[in-house]
Length: 455
Ligand SMILES: [Zn+2]
Image (spheres, rainbow, N blue to C red):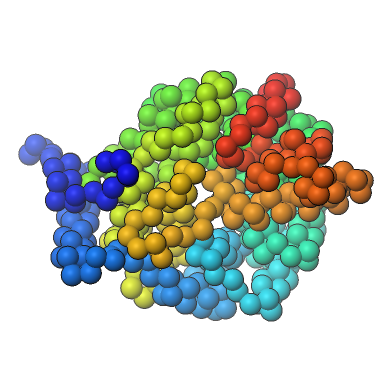
């Protein structure tokens, strides 16, 4: 185990705490306050771990109870998210998947029925039954249905009307609005291509629908290296993830300054806290464990693809132990659920993304790296779609099979050939390719990219 892959000596890392050199600003005051709160957690942890060396522990049972209760009945605190109900479902299901927790079939069937009622008659999914379709809730619903993965769940994604909806929110230049007449930002491009990829649109449909999209996304890169929500806006972790994940699927990395993106991303990991901030000069936040944490291996894969240097992907370029320390020591509520930072309440959004970040930290390399007891190991998540890798592959295959003649479908299922690599179908006889993999073999990605040179 190299130095970077060992748990940190937290006492020594105190030297990285902020020194404002006597010049206080509201930013430095908040930063110092946050570091002090985290220091209390790390100090307490060091005392406790001197008595019990199996610490820190992932509070699996508490999180499982929290997620189970939330899926059955939410508290009134969530009323304000009435227009985000497919998101709530997705956050619960994905966090549960990372924990290897499966809900009972009756409950999942009710979830599928509910998501079906959120589907608009002209395509896409709204925030609740009867609400207008929105790209964000469409992404969440498609992801949730792929995680459930039953035939009924996958059939709830109506690909014909989904296509119609994506065309309705597409602009002439390939950018996407979040809903008809709504705001235009890089989330739109990501939500659209991620959903289209999981639903396995034909290459011809994809080519037309996403003509110009990668070029528009590339315009959102800022002087800092990260991406803003739209051209000219500030670099931000969530938007940078959306941009890089979209480019990973679409191709178009030649248009981006990947070294600048990598430098910006790795510098968002906080030296003392161990977690990530979303923007320069902002505070650490548990949800960026995924948005920034997953961005690092995605950018590495993009660089490897662009420069045809596969070895770029073999080293981890962020401190995976430090991120696990932040999530496990600072972000777990003893009553279940995960949080933004000490002092904040648990919520489903932070539970999903802090847990997903933990999965990325443990599994972004071929060899899992687990902080503490081996029982802390969680399951991996697909860094581009943020659902279980097998759920992404199964959904993709299911839809290819629906379209394909029988023989091609058999090949797609790996009955004749196949590499066994998640989402990699480029070498198994299907003429449809999926590039949204983060596999060891980048060849399918390169092929896919070269077939999309129009962008
Ligand atoms: Zn957050």
